[in-house]
Amino acid sequence: MIQGVNEYKNAAGIVLLDVRTTQEYSEDHITESKNIPLQTLDKVRTVVENKDTELFVYFYYDARNRQAVAVLGQMGYTKVNNIGGIFSYRRKVKR
Image 1 (tube, rainbow, N blue to C red):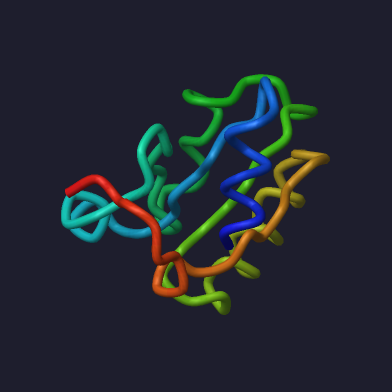
Image 2 (image 1 turned 90 degrees about the vertical axis):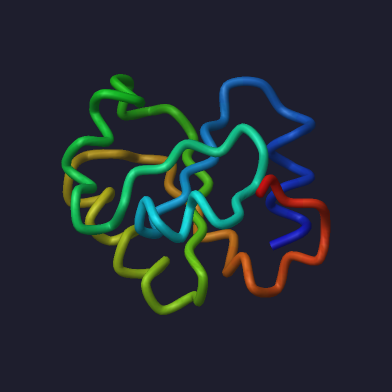
């Protein structure tokens, strides 16, 4: 998780995608991440139109990350990375 966030911060054009519920996102999230809940992942097109944009996806636990990565791949997104769960991220989060 930490490596993925550091990579995101050091590269241009990557979108950090939080696929938890809106409630979970409002409680804490990584600064500058975009919240598109897993249940409404089809709305990702409103945030990321170009399907070749690199996406870094996180959830609370890795299991749902894998599900989100699979769905995004089925939608045609070509550069989707599971960077782990926020539970393992010990850095500052926005509350």
